[in-house]
Length: 95
Image (cartoon, rainbow, N blue to C red; front, side, top):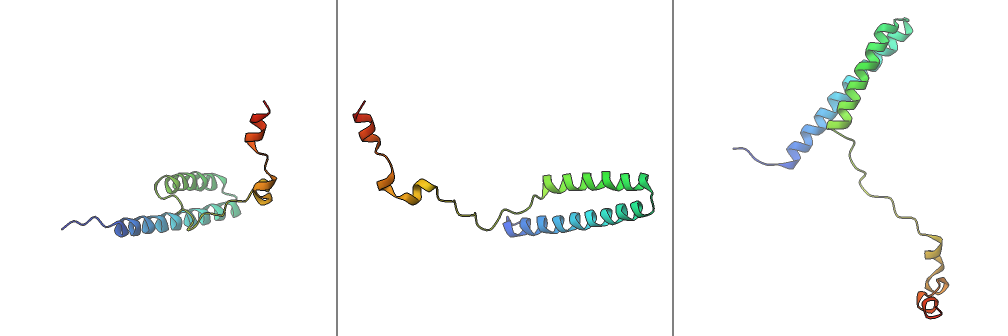
């Protein structure tokens, strides 16, 4: 029986993300080693491969959204309270 279970999909994306990150780390190591050996052609290949992998990662498994959104900063005017705000009714009445 096939079930539609969002946690299975979420788990699959998490596993995919971990594997892609591991591959990116591996390619970074290969590139660093190539630079140390002054093998710039191999380093360039590693850089290109890392670019493909990071583009794939960002397209398929973007980083998760933050658990909570930061609190909206209160404007200066909001801290002054309603008495400090000019009344639009009085301003319109004088026109």
